[in-house]
Image 1 (cartoon, rainbow, N blue to C red):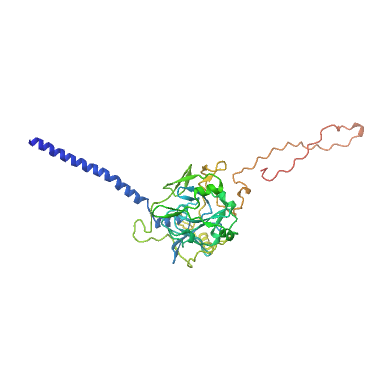
Image 2 (cartoon, rainbow, N blue to C red):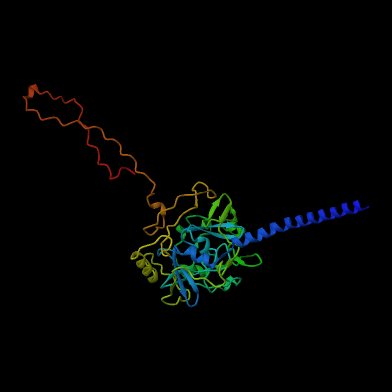
Length: 404
């Protein structure tokens, strides 16, 4: 009897140990998953550090820390070095800037005549924080300014008229859409003949502005619309392959640092020489440089740059994604492009291609050496025959550099 009780006791002990082991096995993956989630979040300090090499952080009394990108006078948010694609979140902006993952999917933009374009950090990810208009044979978009709040009505949002970019609908997903924008002239008339596209996507926490729906674009253009899937990436550079867009999209943006509870300060931040004003009209002169940016550029030229600490370097745009001419839905990865030194024309194809090699110069026929003049002879004994072939005609002069 005692042996039976001992066996029963041992069985119960083994059962308890086994149950405890199974319980720990079930709990460990959940704990590891939670730790992995914590590793995926970023803070405003990550914004400050990541964007510092490409611009200047400014401390403004009204908006806090704002960022001035080191770009030329032609820069416009959601216009320069990027293009639109349709994803499951709606119209999504694909930026070719190394800092585009942050400034075109978080926060807001504003324009000040003294500072130029400024970016204000934000917490919530979106396919593109812009407002959309449609009608009169145009699609148009404009960046959302600091006055727009998350979840607010897009129909009540107003911005300067020259913030809008209007193009014909059939070119909305072309990588050369900028060829079909006539600039801000005529925006007043187009705005009065268009309406706000009040399409949003609500995931329960944040309401995204999607722009024209797939069916609306298909109906207006008569063309099929490819829908890309957005996937998270640990790389800061956005990549498009087949029907997938991979971009850096942290799940959570915190206003505090990873290691400290108090807010952090951007590296080498400067105090705003003057307060940032309410959104203003854009200076459309491509050669004009905002006074603040001109001062920063002059300071950079007069000081030695230490690698890893300079925060005012102008980044060379990298066109990591480019559509092919043969199929509008095929993509290829190209090499970084050189910074444009001259304003872009309306027709980029009118410019000579940088990789076009001049055609080889055709070899010229060997010219016979000129004969020494012979002394005159009596007419009856003339040795030069009239039937000999005439000397070769001189070849036309070659163009400098060979024939193109």
